[in-house]
Length: 224
Image 1: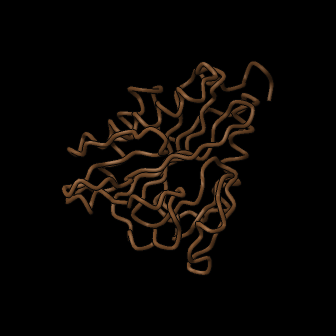
Image 2 (image 1 turned 30 degrees about the horizontal axis):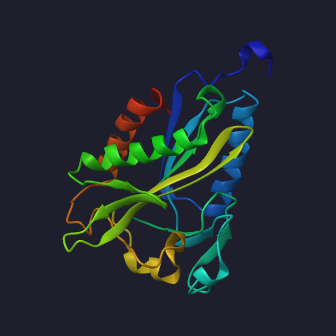
């Protein structure tokens, strides 16, 4: 591809949604290849929304002792930051492939932006979600005063291009989290929009994600 035909990160971010469950190894390979193409300015930035079959993924800080039931679901080494997490149907995964060279090269600010994206999205469904110092992800306070995690964040950077990203619990089977200690945190549980009594469709969630992403990061265009 000639230099004059390259796609630059200042263009709109492609917005892709998969309807079928996506196998984790193929999704991870796609992200890695797309990140390389973005770094070479041969592809546009992209957000990819999807669901996975039930699985556990291990980040670079994962401890084997946090994998409580290693034979329950397939376990994948992800290369992202963080520890063990669960992915499965009813959880919206958002893979974030953005070029931080055009966004200040500030990883902390980038992660705060991802957190705010989730917080603002959940606010559209009357859910007050919050950051917690020293705890990765986004949290809610339950009616009994306990705190529970409703969304996870785990990213990886290569040549200042991000991949992996976020996950929000819409209506997954929360018992599936029992096979791990999510993100190494034992003293707090996990929750979902459904568990909080919110009737929200995946399409509703996707629309809220799109509008709030555009407020924080960049305009988008639907990927063909």
